[in-house]
Image (cartoon, rainbow, N blue to C red; front, top):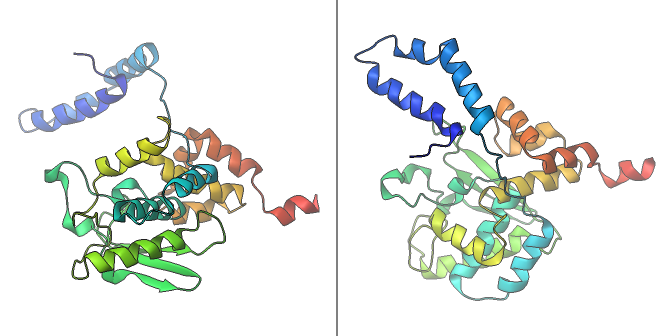
Length: 259
């Protein structure tokens, strides 16, 4: 069986956990110089380049709006609301959907309808959990109302009206027409029906971060909005050349005009 060299570290960690009750020093051996050098050589010799999905840009969202914006089908309204809200909110796909595997689902991570607040200039909801939140403290996601074609408020309001009509007593915010919380597989299938194969779930988060960088938003602000840990955000920038370029060249319009 072929194993991707990048997965070897995870395999070794799992093996170490199984052997530790019988061999207490197994983790010391696993982190030894010989093992580390062997893994490093394996990555150099057999490693393959990472194929990264591109960020969703404004033209992509406009394409989705042109195809689905006039639809009165509930699932279409749900998808557009999730797509635009996820991109502008820099949300992970796991924060919008639940896992396909039933055993991995956790009701504590589901966003609830009663936490939604809608004001003229923004709407918000409470995110009970995100990847960097180990203690379920949660935080409020705020999405600004804009004048763009891709304005998330437009699609969120349309979805909420449909959702409250169909399921006025359900507690979950995101609901399909059959009354279930959308899964990752459902969202990805809808995404791939609209866009090429170079777009995936991570494209929402990357697209939102790139859009903010191009608008001249400071990296620290983007990091806070996206709930990245400091070191994770630095790695994310280095591994996403489009975002790095946007941060290098993206400046507010008044700054560009002054030069």
